[in-house]
Length: 185
Image (tube, rainbow, N blue to C red; front, side):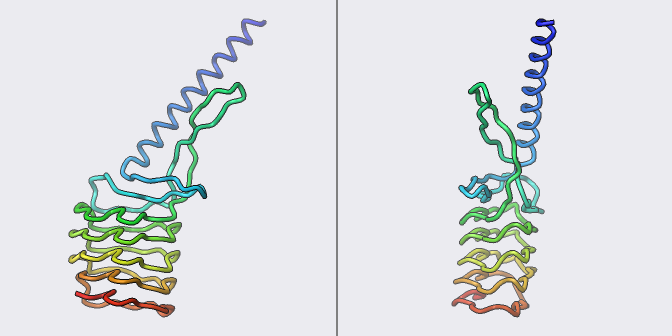
């Protein structure tokens, strides 16, 4: 009876180990095209793109591996989904691969120079959660001709869309501030 109990315990340990390995493998594959940091508030900031596809969908969340202490004092690694809430300053700067970007609805902040110099970028879809376009966020994107500026945007900072290829831009109705050179070029 004791041997059977020990055997069942070992099977549970092996199953747990294999489950953790499977989860780690799937997390690595699902986030492989993005570099990121985990923030203190349990959110994720994207810091770059390593994929090869020019059409990019910024995810609403990423699987992140965290260490968990077991009852016996060991450490195992578990995955949890955390929301992607920001694109870090310079996150995709000078990324020649990007052509079309869709930004997920959890993103509330796009850092300065986030997409600056993306020469092949032609269109961007911003979510309704964005309230500000940071300085130079999309500057020097000469092929960027299509962007939706949702009504949630209240301010556009210095040079945010400078030297883009726009011929026509619809300004959101709730805009309070457009800083100098936002659309120069």
